[in-house]
Image (cartoon, rainbow, N blue to C red; front, side, top):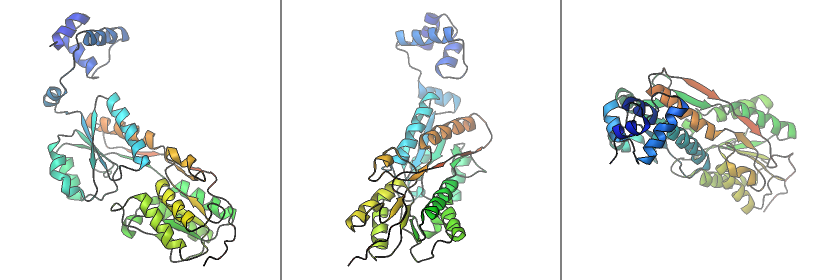
Length: 336
């Protein structure tokens, strides 16, 4: 088995130079890097990551908390996380939280993570977060005091689409939130929707916000059941907002089963702009959240934190995406 000393001899450099280049610690000239990589490949040399972790107290492992792995939005974000992590010399481990974090606490603490990225919608308790922080784990997307935040502000996109719906003639809207009312009160999209409804003069009614029990059930199911509950009552809501695109997909399925035409009789709006949203029938009006880019930025922020940087607050842009699912309202014929 080849050693670091063998690679250094083959490349004509010091062992320290080999370590710096292969572990991305310190750059060298392109010519020197090329010699080192060629020597490592020729000798089939691979650094012992576990030994390095013990020596440097950096396991180069990143945990990623996630709560809805079947949602393409999170899949696209994970893609960005994995690509950026690999480029920085880290590997990721996905921790699926389907209930509360306490149930997996021992497993999380035993993994020796250098950092954790939170993209889960599962609430965490302050004691758990503080335990992670005091154990020396770098954190992203927990709170601003104990780690970095990489956030995309979807509120402006929601306000834009609310104004567009009003300009098209809509006056009665519903929003399938999917979360509990407590969680919804903290969501900038929900806050923007409520504020714009009030400011623009949308009609107030009992189904303005449709709550659910996420994450016990997935967003598609909640979108379907929410639309069934609202529109089986034969009301005159003309535009339906959904917490995300796959929730909108479930809602469109329900409307089709109720023989309510989308968008001729009810317009539907999503959020996230997942890759498949432009292939919905009809193509979905939504909010572009650049989820892949957010994934890469979270890793970069985490690595800077691991390397001793101060906590950061990074706000990424979002933008409204107009497609065929939002059109002027038409009067819907009563149904039996």
